Length: 338
Image (cartoon, rainbow, N blue to C red; front, side, top):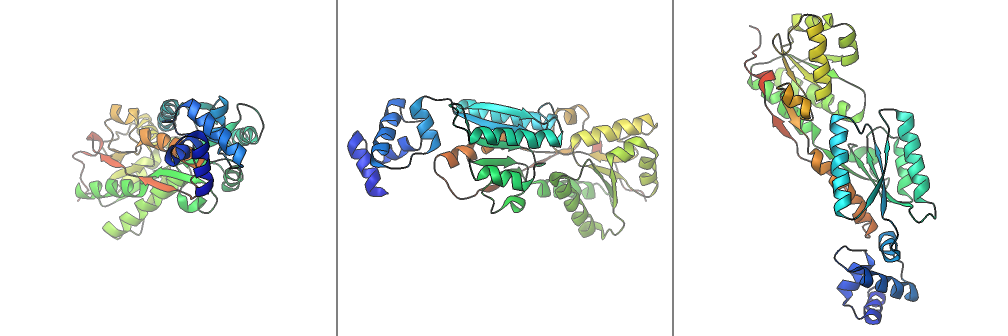
């Protein structure tokens, strides 16, 4: 490989390091130099990556994106960071919005995968998946043909499948929420779930683990927002059983909880504290204590992971980005009952 690269350098009059960058499709190398290196590599029988060849041919550089809900507060922000990162790298995006429809998400992934293996000039070069709702076997199948980076899924679930992942440290974020509530005097909390998807499961698990560690809790309170919205008296029932704080799986769940309580004549926060997760715009408007996820970084990093693969990286990457507790008025001044 080194000798062949040296021959490319000799044929093109480049240094070996410059020839290597050109064959990776690096942005810092001129289009003329990249094309020259690709022609030399072809003549020598040296394999050329898809990114470098597409750039040398002047063809569009397209990534496919599948997103759970582009209009959602969290996924919308991650999608915007994906778009900005791709634009900065000179990449175009082909976006499929699942609108929380799992069948649409699966068909969208299949559609983009089909484009990736086609011979079209604008075929998809790689996939950015802004969803944890797609089956691992479908992601693995796509990753056998093109680079795939998934936002929100655990590396444990996709390890060994050739898929890269990036997510936020939800466990540490939930732990911080629980420690904050404990410092305010709370000894019984209720976790309010939205769904059974991986992010909710991780947050619920950390809630349970921390509650047991802090208070030796054996009667953990867990409920789901659909049930609470349908029967808000369940909120009062939890409070009557000693719950002093509702820990919502995300900000939108917290907002639905507060609205449902209001319809039943209950004041939340007030009779109990409320926390969210994600730190989306509604959280600030609600004065909601929550956990800030690095939304601007998640989408950008997923794009970078795909580009790294296109430039030759072969090993999997599973990255976890830090979160930050944001304390606001929804947990201020609330103490546990005597």
